[in-house]
Length: 103
Picture (spheres, rainbow, N blue to C red):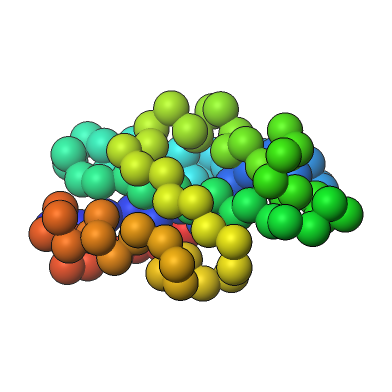
């Protein structure tokens, strides 16, 4: 089975510049996966640094609502590595995922 892994589409990053085209393409990809009944997994970066744009207690850490509504799973992470100290591998294993598309 295939899964789409959508990396850190959070307000704190998206508002840095105009990502309208990128978000549109991500949404198209998400809708293709949904139409094929394939899994959609989002990562959400949570930083402990109060000066970070993705500080864990800030509204900036929220995944943009336009995409978040399609999430089957949200994997919370505190490093660039989506597997380190997260449940991502468990989610993939439980859902028999053997192919990942990353965006």
